[in-house]
Structures are given as structure tokens and as C-alpha cells.
Image (cartoon, rainbow, N blue to C red; front, side, top):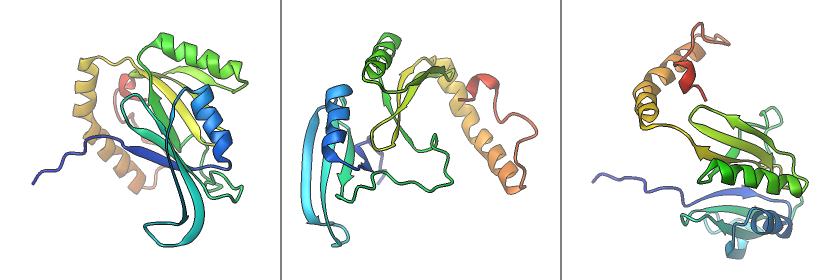
Length: 182
């Protein structure tokens, strides 16, 4: 039996305050609060840890979700991890929507980086109240670009792996053509 992953159902993060998180995702970003799970025990581990699990729905039916375990710690990351690495990207339909969202965020006092042109998408970056880095992105790639990227992906990853295993900090040559670097 061949199994094909359909798509994203949800990505879950930890939050410091469920209401603050609801306000940000529902009132500012416009994602409806769609589901809440409240429990005293974690179903998978049976660990005693009272929590609320909140889900915000995207237009395609997928969700971003948060756990509030009422300890005030919010989203905690390894102290040496660059803050730009863990992030969640949400797709918009047009550059006009991207610019409108940027303005909306800024009007709410949220610092926004971008619009950043990654050659295949254009993106803005910002943080939610929990320190989760978020991205809104708009696709700008052509089918030819996608085809070339798919053709080069494995070769580029193999080159990265070889360089990393050789203990070098930087590759001696680019891993792929500049138009494919994101």
C-alpha cells in the first residue's frame, strides 16, 4: 500500500497565555478560533498536566494550535538556537494581501521584517506574543523554476551533507544556482 501524505493538519506550539494568543491570531491575523481541548492529563503519555489546546483555522482547513499549560513559560527554545530558525509560514494569495497584512501588523505595533524576496516567494516576518516567529508568504515562482528546483534539490542536499561531514563551515562553491537559493 502506498501512503501519500495529504497535507498539514496542524502545527502546535506552546503559549504563555491562551487569551493573548487568541487575540493575536483571531483579532489581528483574522484566523478564527475553531476548536479547544481542555484536559488534566496528556492523552498520549497520561502525564498529569492541566492544559488547554487551542486551534486556529486556515482557509484550507489546516490549523495552527497552541498549548497553554499555565506555567507562564510560553514557547521556550534552546538558548543557542538562532531565533529565525523555528518559524511557521502561512500563505497568502497575492502581493497586495502581503502588503495589506504588513500594514495591519504594523498598525497593531508589531515589528515586521520585509518584504523579503526569496526568488520563489516573497515574505514578511514577525513574532507572535509567545516569541514564535511567523512568516506570511506569497508564491512568485514559475513552473520552470519549480521544475529546476526539484531537479536540483537532491544534488544540492548531497553537496551540503558532504560539506558538513567534511567539517567545513562553508561550501567552496554554491550548492545551487543563485536563483534557487532561498
